[in-house]
Length: 336
Image (cartoon, rainbow, N blue to C red; front, top):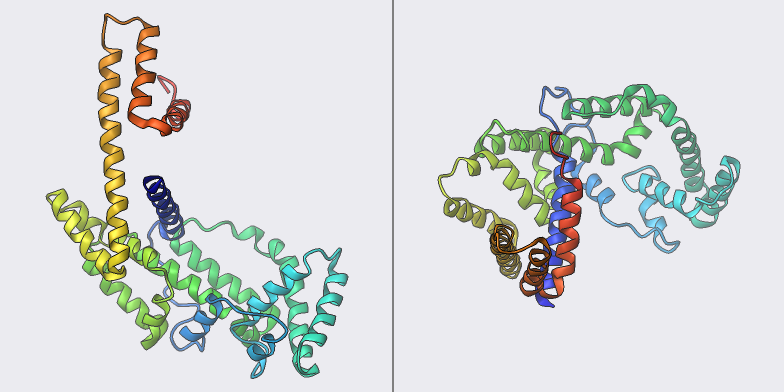
């Protein structure tokens, strides 16, 4: 049971890694030199952290988010909350009426409700027409195209909402996206060594966040930062002379991000994966010997292979057989 749990944990790790790689592994290229939001833009690391962190929009709490200015780093998340709360509205008119009534009941002053509702109304129509506006832009496939897309969409938002409102409303989310795209493009550059990438990332952090970059990075989960570190040093690791060197360097990276208890659990996952790999290697060697035995007919070979699977994989034998069927089904046909 413990081993199965460890294997499940390892599977979760793999899923997270895939998400991280998909999110940042874009083709490198010349990226737009001008930032949408640099360190002098007025969109701060604190704004981004407010947007990323969970917010409580219950009637008792919501007024605290907007008491100084209704249009701030929390507003877009609040609009997401309203979208979800009234997602069953039959049309735009009903949606706006329900949001209007809710705001005037929820906000402590009519002035606050007025300002939020006027911006929400613009936001609702903006969302409705956004697809038509961006349809001709195409889907970004490189980091350079993604940053260019961010420039274009923020320019469009500034036309719709006005510059100050658009930047206050969308700035925290867009700046975090821009940072991840630019940082991901650097990390995934297979032609550079880790130390050089680290210097470029440090320069990026200074340009975009000034002295507050570390607070933004700290929001990222340790597991994500660890796998990014592996990606940054992929060229160094690939050129190491032995597995022992690579494992030692990997161990150093893990110590940067994980507690001792987490390190122990990762070690156990590594051991389980290694054991499973060794077991499968042994299985395929014995399966090959059975298939190559000229004294056995096809029925006897099939019987002995099934017995071998049951003996080696126990209660996981059926799952192993299903995987073999799937692997065989996705293999290209001969000559393809």
